[in-house]
Image (cartoon, rainbow, N blue to C red; front, side, top):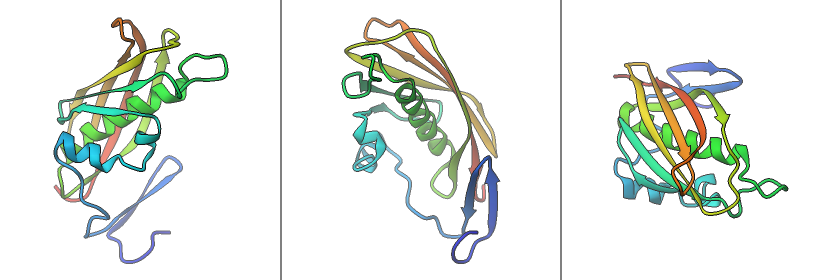
Length: 160
């Protein structure tokens, strides 16, 4: 159940999204604003650096060190977190300040292991619609080899 006055309750998978007439927060519009908004979040804890931000293409990178599984390889969940972060930022840019983008579905294929350096992600829009946005996110290692391919679909909440 959503707290306070709401316009709609939307169930997405196991998540409940509450749509209000007043946004819960202001969404950043620039790369610098997204960097500032990441402070204190999982983005900061994983060391994700946001490089470029737009609805059509958002990029960033993350260190392998500190984001590994016990075997010393980059954790698959860290790759997916990088992918979902980049795709979600791009989807929010598409949604604009009066609306919110929430993840509906993410899937990923892990192609190779990485033990050191950084991984780099690029989220490219596949579909930018009125109510949904979809992205393909490719994660590569420092040598440009594909580490992970993910796809993210976001629902756009609020009025257009």
